[in-house]
Image (cartoon, rainbow, N blue to C red; front, side, top):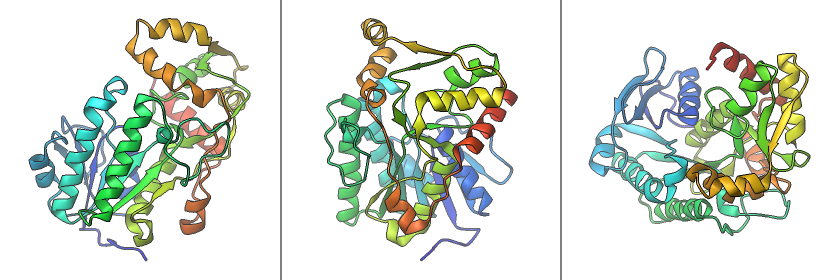
Length: 317
């Protein structure tokens, strides 16, 4: 059963990064009323989208920002090096705002909480076995969300995606270090084993998937893996990018030992090193549960890459 079809019903999106913007676009395409929130209250949004500034860690602020909302989307993503300190307070503040409004809360997550699986496809029923600090943060946050739902504080639905790519996703593994060099005929930069399958989720599909979760009653109280294009190896993905640019493929892989050395001095490299396991074993996201419940809206991979190449071409550095 769908809900909240009235164009005057408010949908509040916290976060104006790639995911938040994709959710905003999906809502606008449905004719929904949208309030987009970030710290500065500034973003490139179409006419009719309300922009609001606010610190999402403050419950008093989020209660005001969520007033009158039917669905609230948590698409925030603090600096990669500051997850343990910043992420839980962000979630707590947004949860408080959604609860005060009696709104559904749709939370965007990744799949760090599962940890290494030895190549087993990632499904929603896997245990939370992460040994990394970011994985443990994700596991605790997911448990807190579902506990809030079970306690009746707020209705929650969780959407999870693999590494994503697409418009605005500059900092992704398949982001600016791949697409900008490919457009210039230079070497794309990546890490890990190029010849293992690795699911990449298209950012626009994430937006559509999160909005579907906010519309459907049967999505509540559960985590859902969002539809992704067909899984190929990292090498095949990058070769498809180069095919779209018209240049022969060139790939530069950062050696593991070099990443380890750099991690001694560079906090960002240290964060990347602890997640390297994702690129050293098959990493396949299974979205069967979502597809069976709501259908499969995943964009074919070549089409998604073509659209992404076009975005990078029209948004040069």
